[in-house]
Image (tube, rainbow, N blue to C red; front, top):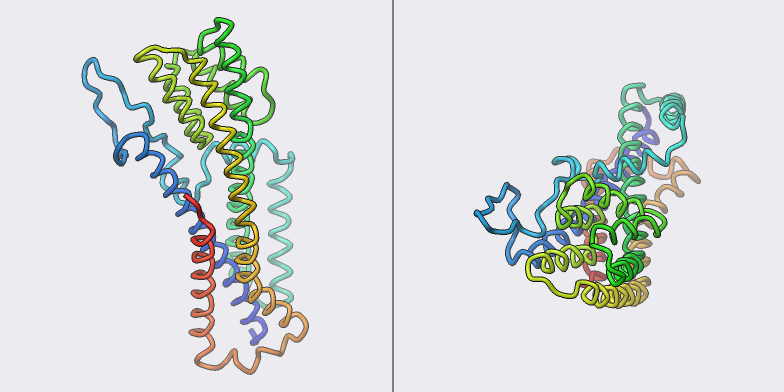
Length: 320
């Protein structure tokens, strides 16, 4: 295998490592956000174990919900996200993916002279990383759609409560009148209540599935109303106004930080794109340094600096 093949393989592995680093950075941010919300509602860090409830006492309103094991926690690809992704796939998606990988292995073997096993391993790794990123992207888009519809869902529940419907019926009405992913989630919560699950528990699980702080507020408000009474319709009406204000603030922050975000993405991707274009235009351009002893350490340092750049730029545009 010649220097060009080594360079191609190094660029592919560098891209895979960079994608993995970006995934880890995003996972770390999401995990910190979840822990911060849990601590805000519980007063302290919630332990990942069964909590004994004293006789006559109430269970915690927000307990951690299992996300499918350590692998789902690490990649943030939950069973719900995988199920939603599989529901949107065409009938023969698996067969088409297998055929594409097979043709890709043969193409890499013929063009670069890499062994079948090595080409298959590299393409399988790239396919897994791409699949994880696609599932995460689609799941986050679904969560954003749900979050955007939360104020409308709260308004529907307020109207149902004011005409005398119980909270369980208002959840069912919200699931029937809404459209999109949030309708599926509210319908699922209404079905859980109809099958005997406690309303507070169903709303808590709804909030955890949707990762919505506004829905966590809803679960807390219902739990307080169950324990102490009060005008739940008035509380949810104020919560709806608060959710709209939070969305407006989030849009303002997104607009203010858009330039810095895209600048960071451009600065992170430019070295890899430039190196790839130079190699395509002149494949022998890097042959003089590939065999040098300092090449691989230098490549590792550059990759490390790129990862640091991504983390630093994300930290600069993060607002709590």
